[in-house]
Image (cartoon, rainbow, N blue to C red; front, side):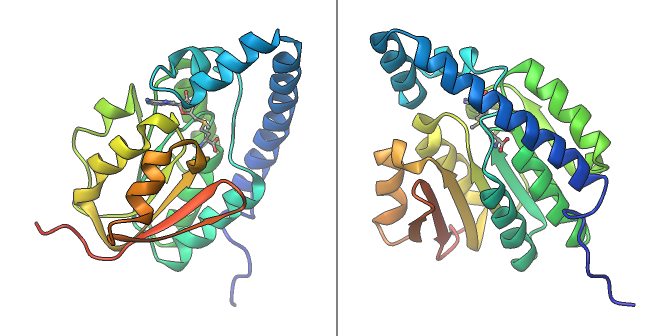
Amino acid sequence: MTSTSTTLTQAPVSTVLQQLFTEADATSATLRQTLSMLPAAERDALMASARAADFRPFYERAKEFHLAVSRETGTLLYMLARSMKARSIVEFGTSFGVSTLHLAAALRDNGGGRLISTEFEAGKVRQARGTIERAGLADLVEIREGDATQTLAGELPEQIDLVLLDGAKALYPRILELLEPRLRAGAIVIADNADWSEEYLARVRTGGRYLSVPFAQDVEMSMLITASPT
Ligand SMILES: C[S@@+](CC[C@H](N)C(=O)[O-])C[C@H]1O[C@@H](n2cnc3c(N)ncnc32)[C@H](O)[C@@H]1O
C-alpha cells in the first residue's frame, strides 16, 4: 500500500512540533511585550545588536525565546530537502530545534543522512537535544555547541546539499564562506532575515556564483550554480 503520510506529519514529530510551535508562539508574545516595555532607546539598541557584529547581548537576552522559523518556512524547508533528496544539511542557529526537526524529518524520508546544527546557548542545546530525541530523529542530528565560526570551521561533510542560515545575521557572509567549498553544484542556501545583512545579500545576488531570490519578505533562497574546484 502507498503511504500518504510523512515523518513530518505523523507522530512523534508532528506532536513534538505542535508543542514546540505553541511554546514558540508564547515566547514570541513575551518577547514582543518585553520589548514594548523597554525605554525606546534601550529597545532600539537591543534590536540593533541583533544585526550588529556585537550580537551577544541580544542572544543572551533571548536565550529563553525560540525565535523559530514560521510554520510556513518550516514546511518549505522540509519540502525543499525532500525534493532535492538532500542527504547532507548544515544549519546555523538551532535554538530549541524547530527548523532542525523539519530538516531531520526530510532526511528520514530521504532514506537517511546527516544534519549538523550549531548553537552557542548551552540551555538551548540541552533542550534541543532532548526534543530531537523525543521526536525519534537523534540518529540523524549532530548539534555542535559553541560559536558557529568555530564549530563549523572543523570537520564538515565532503558535500553539502542544503544550508539554513538562522543565527547572528552579521555572521552570514562568514559562515557561507566556511561552508562554500563543500557546497555541491545546485546546493540550496536559505537565509532567514537575510535583509539584515547587506553584505550577505551582495554576496549571493551579485558575482554570478548563485541564483538568488527573496521570498516571504525576509527569507533569501540562493542556489549555487557551480561548485568550487576541489
Ligand atoms: C533565530 S534563532 C534560530 C531559530 C531556529 N532555527 C528555529 O527555527 O527554531 C537564532 C539562534 O542562533 C543562535 N546563535 C546566534 N549566533 C550564534 C553563533 N555565532 N553561534 C552559534 N549560535 C548562534 C542564537 O542563540 C539563537 O538561538
